[in-house]
Image 1 (spheres, rainbow, N blue to C red):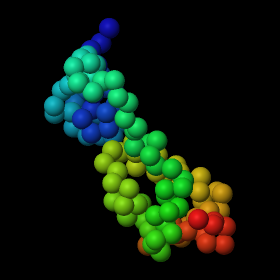
Image 2: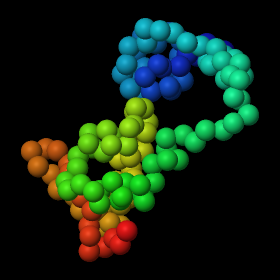
Image 3: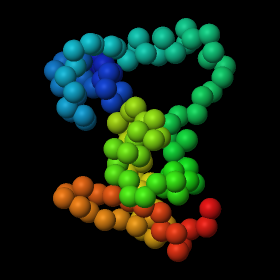
Image 4: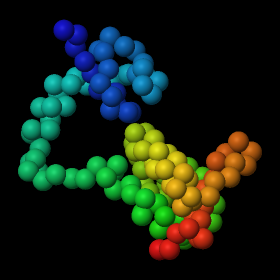
Length: 126
């Protein structure tokens, strides 16, 4: 069985012999083994409390409330406003935006190769 490590950037499980993460492309300079992460989780004093992940906090309602306060926003603006630090959470936000666009709750435009969204006030009552 091969020893696995965790990518510092995207937190994916990667073969220990890899130099770059196959998921995010980040160079694997600091090697952290999977067992080290598990052991560290059990050493935490607050192991009884369960914190919500960022994905659970990124809701359609929250996205729509942020869009209500602003006009056109691109993904970088939304990531900053939602205080997203993890790549997986940013990808989750993109999926939520696609869902809201399909539901016609947000409008989408592409300007100079960049995608912008804004609240569709005709469809959403907050």
